[in-house]
Image 1 (cartoon, one colour):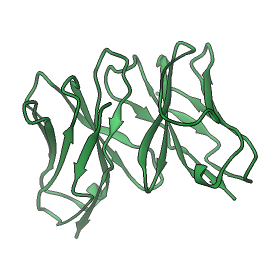
Image 2 (cartoon, helix red, strand yellow):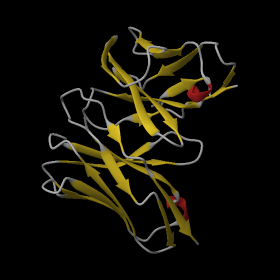
Image 3 (cartoon, rainbow over the protein chains, first blue to last red):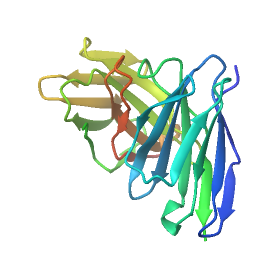
Image 4 (cartoon, rainbow over the protein chains, first blue to last red):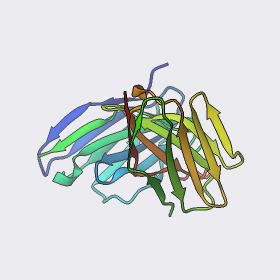
Amino acid sequence: KAGVTQTPRYLIKTRGQQVTLSCSPISGHRSVSWYQQTPGQGLQFLFEYFSETQRNKGNFPGRFSGRQFSNSRSEMNVSTLELGDSALYLCASSAETGLGGYTFGSGTRLTVV
Amino acid sequence: GENVEQHPSTLSVQEGDSAVIKCTYSDSASNYFPWYKQELGKGPQLIIDIRSNVGEKKDQRIAVTLNKTAKHFSLHITETQPEDSAVYFCAASIETSYDKVIFGPGTSLSVIP
């Protein structure tokens, strides 16, 4: 059974640009959550999607957005990149929100220069 | 909102010894407590979880205990091996409420051969 796939694995962007990250959850999983991981802040919740609807949102500025498609694949977008956006962005899928644990992808390492 | 504290932040043990990581949570409504292990370059992996109707759960060399009254839970790893070296995260959430999962700041465990 394939795991959670995140693409790309690494990205280098310039301040002010925008970026789109992709996540394909485990087949049959309808919930996709996104987390930002940094050495100083740990794992910070960005947002969660279930059946194409955003059901939860963390405390991030509006520059961070996401969406989910009918096949449960999800994308997150960060506009007007800032140096502080450099982080590992992790996607996690679960069968149903809040039921059981997550399966995480390996993440996308974003570096903003 | 929910807040999860985790101690210690770093832990070094000799191979074969036991390791204990402790977490406390703030929201008494939390009822699901997973533990994740993150190895270098990978996303967190669920290793064990416990629900609030259970006081202890074991899986081979790892065990988790929960004290609902004190709002704390612990991870115990016995007979540690070098491959146990990783960062461990505890987390808390309210299952079935579609609430987001809140993670502790992590514990970096080093097992010295």
